[in-house]
Length: 139
Picture 1 (tube, rainbow, N blue to C red):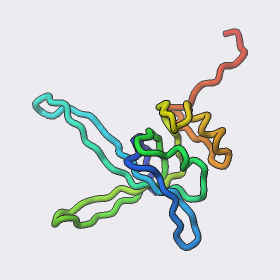
Picture 2 (cartoon, rainbow, N blue to C red):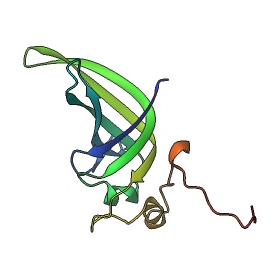
Picture 3 (cartoon, one colour):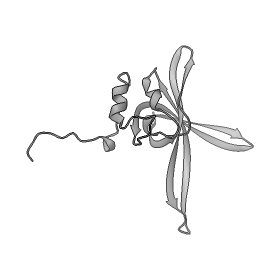
Picture 4 (tube, rainbow, N blue to C red):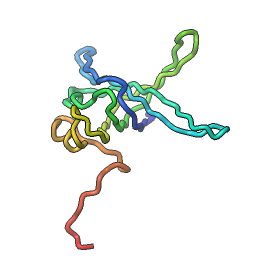
C-alpha cells in the first residue's frame, strides 16, 4: 500500500455518494507547488487529487469549495486518454482528514471546533501540525 499525504484546497463542495449501499464522501483537492525554472522565474504546478472518505460523517458540512485540508490515505493512480493525450489521475482513499486554517463565515474557526461539531468524525492531525498542549510544569 502506498500512502499519500497532501495539503490542498477543495475545488468544489464535497458530496455524499452511495454505491452498493456503502456511503462515502467524494471531493477533490488541488495541491499546488511553487518552484523556480532555469531562468529564475517563479512557476506553480497544481496536481488534482480525487478523494473518497467512506462512512457517513458530519464533516461534509465543513468541506466547502476553497477549504484547506490535510489528507492522508491510500494512493492509487490511473492512466486514461482525454482529447487524444494520455493523462494520469491521482486518487486517495482518505483515512485521516484535518481541516486547516481559515475563518470563513460558513466554516468553524478552528479544526477543534469542527471536531466538536462532528463527534462521529475524529479530528486527525499529522505529527508536524499537532498543537502542543500546555502543561502545569514550572519549566
